[in-house]
Length: 230
Ligand code: IPE
Ligand code: IPE
Ligand code: MG
Image 1: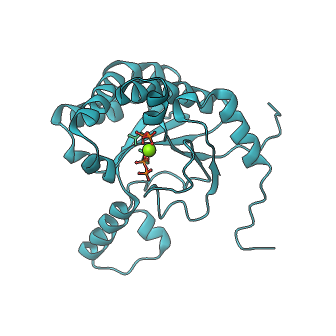
Image 2: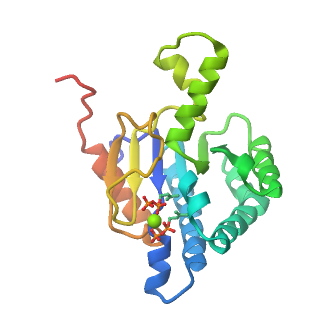
């Protein structure tokens, strides 16, 4: 990789295509989610190596939680349990922390506990943050923030409003990658992504390798970000 590449500070990753990946192999959808989780673990490590500081992975949307069959959700919960009970420690060892965004109160209680422990046991002063978006919706994020603003009883500017979102202490994503071929953002970081560069690829998430990730980084680096200026 070219050392002079502009590296995104915060990547949002819409990890789509697990189900189709499994179907192609005549495997159950749960096998696709398992392969997707393994891909996510590899990519988080790789992103940190490339100098990215934050990566938000879209694990489960608010729509997924109500819209997927219970056995599929149970499979995803199992993967989260495994990750937060053991795998997360490998991330800590690399001086990285985890953070969770979304309404986790709707998840099984033991998972809520594991997620909180995962955050609490994270190293202080970590150089990389892996953000898990779980039962996350961009609209729900905004509506929560509006309700908190009303409770606060004061008019807010953009900075004040952003401080009420789930992502209060992390910078806006500058690059959003979606695998799996759909050209939409499906309720992901709706407010925060106002000026993000978007990258769509047909590659199904379990096949999204470090090489594909580097291709996306190269593409980001070649973009001119104007922010309304000329
Ligand atoms: C993304 O993969 C993971 C989740 C939404 C939980 P999908 O499960 O949506 O995979 P496809 O889109 O059916 O292939
Ligand atoms: C988006 O994928 C959500 C996640 C990747 C977690 P979906 O598969 O749920 O999105 P739609 O339904 O195609 O928009
Ligand atoms: Mg999908």
